[in-house]
Image 1 (cartoon, rainbow, N blue to C red):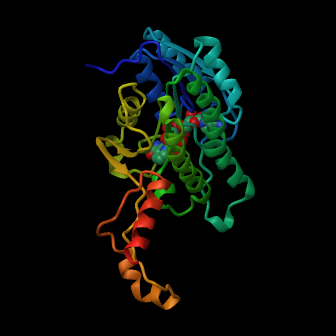
Image 2: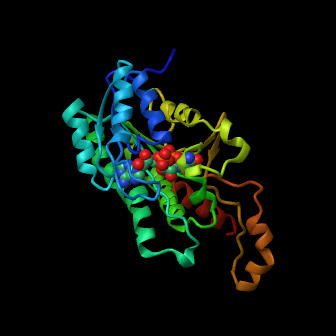
Image 3: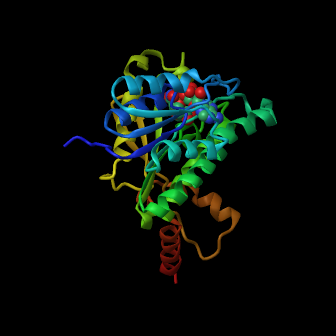
Length: 296
Ligand code: NAI
């Protein structure tokens, strides 16, 4: 049976751009009432124009769907939640997708370049999520999808600000997955690769294969009430979907750890054989406890 979103209300930030627009159109096509948020600035976060969000709303309405536009920055999250409440009375789904780039080698990066990127990707998304999360707790239902990036999870030259913000979203996803679970609020993330103005000129001959729609397919599933995944991160690029996770190696346990012992054992410490994927801090601590007890 197709996944439908009748009576669900979704906020999608940055929904005037490539990925957000695709998510908004698809959720609306499947019956969701959508708040299309986008301040319509440049890829570097300068300026703003209502056309970006309005065009997507017009497209949705023209196809018989329901949507309203919100032209504010995610750094003004109250306005976005208020748009959802005024138009539709609730918030079931939040897709944190808005983003900008201010790429530079770290030694040349200004404080403003750092703040602008952290403000949109991390602080804005976090503040908006907190408002939505409170509403979701009250109604005991919610689905939140964050947009992280391989840049932050694996590292990429020239993106210290962006990578730090995107890695921050990974931490937020993990923590909220645990805090929200009992209230039926599930929080996951995607690390996309898709053609957009952000990746213009970077994708080479993969450009045609990297349709934002494939990222939307994963986001749509994660946004559905039948999806019980919580705290997961998926790399999505064209038709390829893979899980990204944080893991620990088995490591070593020595009765007395000295710098020389670390030097002499680094291969064993780094050995990926038998790595472990803790589901929480508690599970990570249990593994430590067990390893330490085994040496007694
Ligand atoms: P895009 O530039 O087409 O879309 C981003 C949208 O966010 C734009 O429409 C922009 O106006 C909006 N926006 C920027 N600042 C905003 C703010 N303060 N408040 C509200 N809206 C704001 O780029 P794309 O590729 O669609 O990016 C979407 C998300 O996916 C971003 O978070 C990006 O970092 C992430 N991403 C994209 C990748 C790709 O391959 N396209 C790779 C990894 C992550």
